Image 1 (cartoon, one colour):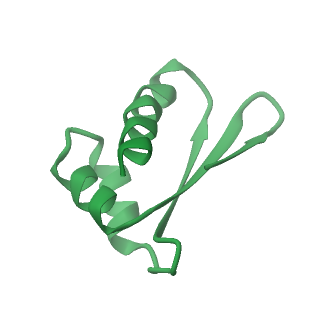
Image 2 (cartoon, rainbow, N blue to C red):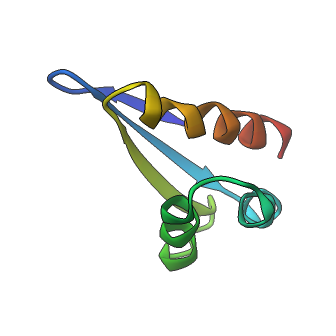
Length: 72
C-alpha cells in the first residue's frame, strides 16, 4: 500500500492478488472500485487500485480494502 499526500487530500494505491481480488468482487464495495480492478492490468504484484481520498465518504471503502489486503 502506498499513501501519497496531495494539496488538501491524499492518494492511496494498492496491489491486490487473486484471492483479494475475488473477495473484493464479492463484497459490497462500490461498483466503481470493482470496475477499476476488473479493468486493471495484472502485474506480478497483483492488480493495482488507486483511490483519491478527499472526504469521509471517500475513506469509507478504504477501511474495508485495508482489511482485505491484510487478510490476503
